Image (cartoon, rainbow, N blue to C red; front, side):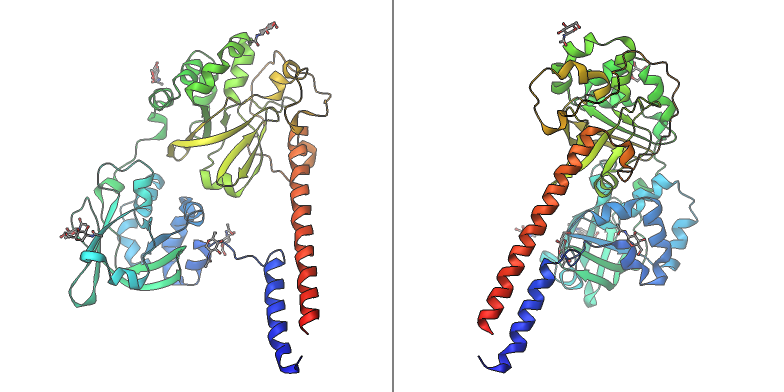
Length: 415
Ligand SMILES: *[C@@H]1O[C@H](CO)[C@@H](O)[C@H](O)[C@H]1NC(C)=O
Ligand SMILES: *[C@@H]1O[C@H](CO)[C@@H](O)[C@H](O)[C@H]1NC(C)=O
Ligand SMILES: *[C@@H]1O[C@H](CO)[C@@H](O)[C@H](O)[C@H]1NC(C)=O
Ligand SMILES: *[C@@H]1O[C@H](CO)[C@@H](O)[C@H](O)[C@H]1NC(C)=O
Ligand SMILES: *[C@@H]1O[C@H](CO)[C@@H](O)[C@H](O)[C@H]1NC(C)=O
Ligand SMILES: *[C@@H]1O[C@H](CO)[C@@H](O)[C@H](O)[C@H]1NC(C)=O
């Protein structure tokens, strides 16, 4: 083989190696980092972080962020909106489609309606969550919220385009929307049980209303609350077991479905791990593990693995998800289930902790979600999962090595 083909072969080998090495994979986009390159957008960027919209943006693909510079933000800031209203306003500036400069100037029929993240929260009514994009005379592109009926802002320039994941553009001014700016109801004013009942979780809501657990939920409203409520089919099937629990057991079970911090879907997805619940009380851990499973987000108690079905409400500091199974804490059900044939590797290794039937409570155990980095805290279920993860990692590593070997072999033949 001629020497001059050597560089080409080397290049191929090196680029293939790059694909195989861990850490060399293409990173998902990070809106905070993208905007940080443009200091004149620091205010807009700051509020994306404060409202946690940055997380939501990073977890989506095929979106367009319409950013406004610091001068353009001052009008909005002078309105002194609550952080909730601010989130609504900013989420109106995140279009759920990819609009690069080219596409903006070539809109079919000259006008289009783009759905936004505001519309996706379910807070917006009717057409108010849509942005009207219209190609104007002289190559200008006008944008306006559909509820305002005007195109009061224009496209200025493209800041960064990563087709077709994220396009970040500058627009001349904030999109006006009375609805997005409207004071959002205080989350405390939301009646969570009637909300649950209206969205397919009537049985769980009724159980909650009949228990002191309701008081615990109410106490945690202001500081942040994430609720995982089982859909009716799941709770109905569980009813015989639920009725069998003591009053304290029922309360613990219900409290086990709440987490005393606000965790959006994207926050849960990006920080998998162990979480304490409202039922956590000193030695009674009552925790579970949150783990991504492809597109799904799962909750593993060590006895069941439930899946998040929908987001029922997301209004900081409150968020309610529906899940497809009742979460069974080991503290209540381990002894009851242990004689049954082990359904999963999670149900192994008996632990020394005695199943607590009654527990004197007055919580306020550390409310922060325990991080998965503290192995001392991890129950055997989580440990089993981690072992499983380790196996996966080992397999991937093995696969990488095998492919690497193939490439080197191939390279040696060609050269
Ligand atoms: C787009 O996002 C996906 C998922 O995050 C990623 O795999 C892909 O590499 C990204 N594409 C670009 C061009 O960054
Ligand atoms: C995004 O970038 C910012 C600033 O560079 C950094 O602080 C943050 O941790 C990044 N977020 C993610 C999810 O990587
Ligand atoms: C463009 O206009 C034509 C005729 O009015 C219509 O049939 C078509 O659906 C429009 N296309 C889009 C993308 O709105
Ligand atoms: C967008 O707004 C313009 C001007 O108000 C209007 O003519 C156009 O029909 C609107 N486009 C859509 C898709 O509603
Ligand atoms: C919420 O609504 C339920 C009826 O669904 C009612 O029984 C309960 O008292 C209400 N709670 C509050 C705090 O208003
Ligand atoms: C209820 O408890 C009793 C006594 O502990 C037990 O025999 C029965 O199987 C339990 N029923 C259910 C549905 O768990």
